[in-house]
Length: 556
Image (cartoon, rainbow, N blue to C red; front, top):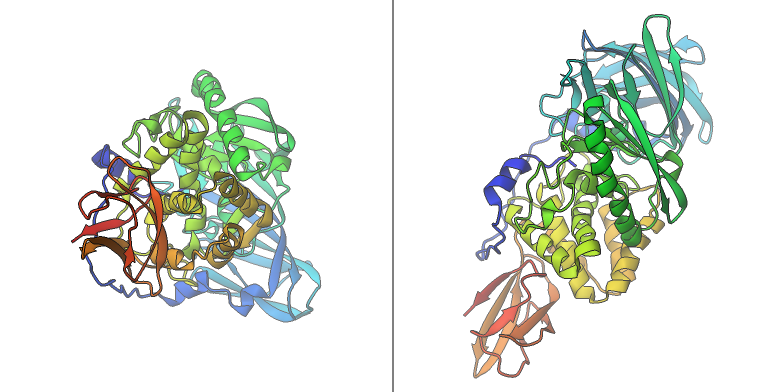
């Protein structure tokens, strides 16, 4: 979750849930310039694909007073081809002290935020090997996390340190050395964070060990048993208190662990009880079992709003319903539940279980997760309520850029990936017109791509096959073009016709149409004029199901 400026947008657009009728404009082709550094960060070159990450041991000490970190990361990998050189990533402001291979230092070079290690002999395809990177420095300080990346250094209300990491988009290499590409999730990981005595660290997975060190620091060892994308790896440091619960879910007993500031304890106990189990019940129904039973479910109070850190969801919504107390949709449905708990936990299925290989396809994370909010509402308030909430989100869609971004340069698409993504998923459900099949598709995605990294093409191909409908023109229009389809309605010789105006050749999409106060019927509209065969239909009295269809309408 990294919705830039949405708090202000929500205030400005409360109640604004209108359909914008787009003009018949040509798509503006925006040219973006990308650098050598963008390619190093975003492209899968042979220096990255030559090894598959199996295990990390990240061991980092936080000197909070000096805002300084130091430590190491052990890379265990399997060679996918013969090689003598590979790339890992670490931001240039952090110093690489040394790289150690088989007990000896090996040479490395740096090119911006990328680092290249040369080994003394060929590492053979299929072999398992390892090296360790030692590093230190003052990491980038996040001023406005989670919208910018880095380390947050703040104080709690009692003046004690309140520290967290947040690095979605910008990448984990902003604070630790890693193969910083979403396509290669590490299979398992140990996270060891050392903090000044009296503080605690909460990271992903399960706490294995707490060690009092001789230098006045305490080390917390957390083990992650499941694959994890590296922007999810987190350090949260504060004077935390802990309470726990369990949830009987589809795979058995799921541990629920809550870490909050002492001053938040009583509020957190009630608020989390009201929100977490209902969320889990709804999402396991729609998406399948919570994907990380082995690592448990945690909420961790943080000095920033929130982030989907796998099995350790960052929470900073001040124990309020809505988004900091406000309703993104302007419908009233959005203040009946805690936005951060529901949205960020939804990412455990879409974003953490199913992870895009390239952040250009981040709509797979954000569109599905934003859509999960309406499914949560539907579970407890009915389908119409979920549709109304989803409709209300249109007030924040800009349609200024395509949802899908450019690949291989670490560039996200439009922020419309959130709300436009949610809206088009609801529209697909309406087109499929079979709620049981739609639920099977959502659960099937999480089952078939369980703990995998995927491309947008894999997701869309799966939906096509599972639904029995060719959605490719639909995806092309809504994801790769910034405009939405316009349904042109006209009469000729006493009959009423319609056709689609889009940028996509061969576009067709069934649309629900009725005469005023009548029953909706599906009309298979295409680029060619199609007669609307409904008794009594006129251009003036035909109505489109604009609650569930995000389209423009033009009547001539």
